[in-house]
Image (cartoon, rainbow, N blue to C red; front, side, top):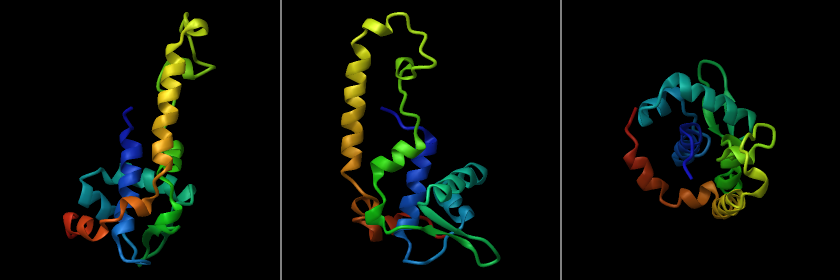
Length: 144
């Protein structure tokens, strides 16, 4: 299973914000610079994370972004489901499935079981679990 860069960057934004002191605002530019990610691409991700209620955006001169929830309330499996297209093969898409053997193929069932197992593991973790070493993570991030 390979996650898209969109999901990877979404998780990185949450990790970055989770390493910051509570209620400290960060900027997209700051996060973009820290990870070497396109500012424009990150802006789209931050917008979506805001729509999902995972981060709070504050506009204005002293604005910025921060987590909208406590890290223990942000489930990694849920984030992946919200940011990732989980139709890893054509036959997972009922409307766009053109595979001629789909009706008798067992591979889609095996892949579906694997997907469920993958998500079950992710569901067992929260952002808080991943931030257990947040002080060390903070030292790895460049000072902007």
